[in-house]
Structures are given as C-alpha cells and as structure tokens.
Amino acid sequence: MPRLSADARHRIRARINGRAIEAEAEPRMLLTDFLRHVLGLTGTHIGCEHGVCGACTVEIDGRLARACLTLAPQIEGSEIRTVEGLAPSPDRLSVLQEAFRRHHALQCGFCTAGILVSLDHYLARTPDPSESEIREFLGGHLCRCTGYVPIVAAALNAAKKLREAKPHA
Amino acid sequence: MKPARFDYVRADTLAEAHAVLAAEGENARVIAGGQTLVPMLSMRLARPKVVIDIMHIAPLAKIAEEKDAIRVGAAVRQAELLEWPALAERQPLMAMALPWVGHAQTRSRGTVCGSVAHADPSAEIPLVLLALKGEIELSSRRHKRRVAAEEFFTGLMSTACAENELIDSILIPSRRVGEGFAFREFGRRHGDFAIVACAAVAKGNSVRLGVGGVADRPVARDLLDLDGSALDDALDTLAWDLEARDDLHASASYRRALVRRLGKETIEEARRCRA
Ligand SMILES: Cc1cc2nc3c(=O)[nH]c(=O)nc-3n(C[C@@H](O)[C@H](O)[C@H](O)COP(=O)(O)OP(=O)(O)OC[C@H]3O[C@@H](n4cnc5c(N)ncnc54)[C@H](O)[C@@H]3O)c2cc1C
Ligand code: FES
Ligand code: FES
Image (cartoon, rainbow over all chains, first blue to last red; front, side, top):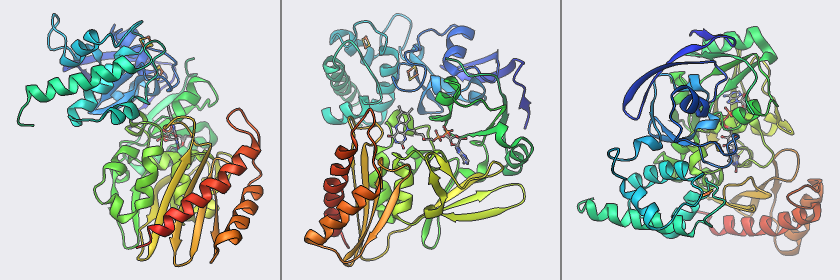
C-alpha cells in the first residue's frame, strides 16, 4: 500500500487504446488533464469538469466513466479506451462515426467525443436498441447544439449497419 | 476547478484502510466510485489531506446471498448490482429503484454503499434501504457493528458512520412471501435527483411507505390497515410532517402535493403486486 504524497508526481502505468503508457501525475490530477496535458490525447473533451455533461466519457476496464470524476492514480493498472481508439485506422471512420457524419449528429463537436465513446460501448452490448432506450441512455450526456434528434438517428442507423455486418449475432 | 492537494492511498486490505482512518480521522476521506466525492474535491467543498481508495480491497467487491438478505460490499458498483441476475427475484424494490440512480454512465462507477454513505436526502438507494428496514455494517480498526437504516441516516448528508469507520457492506432484506413492492419517482428528467421519490412495501393490509427528496433525510412510515379517505388523511399528515421547504426545484406545497399523489399511487401499485 504505497502512499502517494500530495506534493510529488508519481509514475502511473496503464494501457490506453491498446498501448502501454507510463507517465507522471500528482494524486490530485484528474484523468481528463492526465489524458489531455500529460499524454496529449486531446480528443477527450472537458465541458463542465464536475460530472454533469458527459463530454469527457471514456471506458475504464470495460465500463464507462467520466474522466473528470476519476483521479489519475485510480487508473493505475487499468485498460482505458478513449475516442482516439474508436476508428479502425487513421484514415477510416468507425461505423458509428460515419453515421454521425452522415446524419449531421454534431455541430460544434464539443459533446461528440463523449457521446461516441458511450454509444460505441452501448451498441456493442445492445445491438438492437429502441429509440426510447437510446434516448434514455443519452440522458447521461448534454448536447447544446443538435437537439439530439440527429444523434438518435445516427445511433439507430449505426446499430442497423452493425447488425447487418454481423448477421449471426 | 481543480482539487486541492491530497495524498492518495490505494488500500489492498481493510486493515490498511482502517489504519489510515484511525491515524488521520476527519482529514481522511474514503473514495469509492468518486461520482460524488470528486466533484466535491474539484469544487473544494471537501479538502481532505488523504484520500483512501477502497475499490481494490477484494472482500468488499462481493454480492452475497445470506439467509434473509443480500449483502452488498462497499466496492460493488451500482451497475454490478443491477446486472446481478438474482436481484429482481430476491429484492424487486431495489431492482425497480436502481435504474433511477443517475445515468448508465454514472452507475458504471458509483457504488451502492457510497450512495448510502453520502446520504443525499433525494437518493434512491438510502430510501429503499430504509423502506426495507435494511442494515449497514460499519467497521473500524478495533470494532465492527451493525446499524439499522432507521438509525443510520441522522440528517442532511449526515450518518451514524464515525470518522474512524467505513461502511463494509449493506444488508438488503430479501423479499418475503406475501409482500408487494412499488417505486415511483418524480423529477425534471430521468437521471436527475428526485424532487419526490416513494418506495412502498405492502403486506396483508398494511403498508410501509418511504419518501425521499422532501425532509433532510429519507423517512418511512408504517400505515396499518388504511384505505380510502383514512389513507388520504394519513398521507396528508405525512406530507405535512416532512416539513418540506421551497427551493430552486420545487415549492413546499408542490412537494406536499406530490407526496399525497405519488404516495397513493405507489401504495396502490404495491398492493396490486402482493404475491
Ligand atoms: C450526473 C450525476 C447524476 C447523479 N444522479 C444521482 C441520482 O439521481 N440519485 C442518486 O442517488 N445519486 C446520483 N448521483 C450520485 C451517485 O452517482 C453516486 O454514485 C453516489 O452518490 C456516491 O457513490 P460513489 O461510490 O460514487 O461514492 P464517492 O463519490 O466515492 O463517495 C461519496 C461519499 O461517501 C463516502 N464513502 C463512499 N464509500 C464509503 C464507504 N464504504 N464507507 C464510508 N464512506 C464512504 C466518501 O468519503 C464521500 O464522502 C449522481 C451523480 C452524477 C455525477
Ligand atoms: S467534463 Fe466530465 S462530465 Fe462534464
Ligand atoms: S454538437 Fe455542440 S454540444 Fe453537441
């Protein structure tokens, strides 16, 4: 049980988007700042920084988490996925990302990173959601631009495309 | 908004967590899911010297079936209890209320016991625990004790948990034959804290009704053998007894109206579901 002292920076090891990382943080550093400032992964956005908007959503050990409600030392030894990990390759969008583009599911894009991570996680576990289930699930995110309608449409469309791609599921 | 400085301890055993709590007292703070504590740190409403992470203490990560209760350890997340296959069968009221606790994106991190420890007057889990007459198991370096939910919630976000103690687990009573349950909540959006929430346990002709979001803590009352206008009168008395106040979200009279209306609906539904 090492006690990480408040005034020093401490080595933190984790896997992020399949890559092992090792970097330093004070105990009080939020995961949002650790990702953005220390690791340069600026895809994760910061909206409210106190848990209400969902812009900072990432996956930690297979569960969704608000990065602004996570302390950097809490991720020691964990497996993290961020929005940077969604596209299959640098020049291709995922099915969900492509659906967001087609449906104009983003305007300023501030909320988008968090919503994409969240929906990617959700659709992998709920392949055939109803519109009201998607709306309920999106309750954990705030979007100030779109009015949600195109986001819901993109999610339903992505779900359909993903089902078609995997016929035996 | 960044937290002030603190030490961080990842406890591997309960004894380690107890030792830090014993040494640091009010300067130490347990972190479980962090869904309430981290915003408080960021807004500097809480400024502990040391934060103790209890999520890696293996024995606390269990859901266990005991004779008359479900034991939920302090490291069990709300989503894990909701996904536990036996929940709806063993305790339907908790299964009904859990989807109302925040959002999928916060239930995935927030713990069941963390919500009990925080004791928000609008929180669903403390309300259900009180309605079911559940218990809270506390431990410190030298002692272990069990407190009934009735005695645990002592006021606005205050509980019987002492500075040197932590919640080990809670005991959620299992359903008994002949009981019916219902849960209703009114809020601006699903996932927001409740303006008024009601949880009812019906057995025979009597019913126990818990109300959250109105008084400074959840309150439960046993209503014996009441129907029709006698039940309406009892609900009216309860609504006034809770001493509702006006705030940003709702006026006191609106809250009283909700207690009468939602209370009645919840009781009627619980009676219909008796099995
Ligand atoms: C957007 C949002 C919406 C929410 N909506 C709701 C809602 O509708 N209803 C609701 O009930 N909650 C809601 N919450 C809060 C809920 O998500 C938290 O999970 C819960 O209140 C605290 O659990 P936690 O595990 O996150 O605790 P933490 O944040 O880690 O801790 C909370 C407090 O409890 C103490 N504590 C935690 N565990 C223990 C323990 N085992 N022993 C002693 N002390 C302990 C901590 O020291 C701290 O003071 C919401 C949160 C967010 C961010
Ligand atoms: S920035 Fe994390 S929830 Fe808003
Ligand atoms: S696109 Fe601007 S907040 Fe959602």
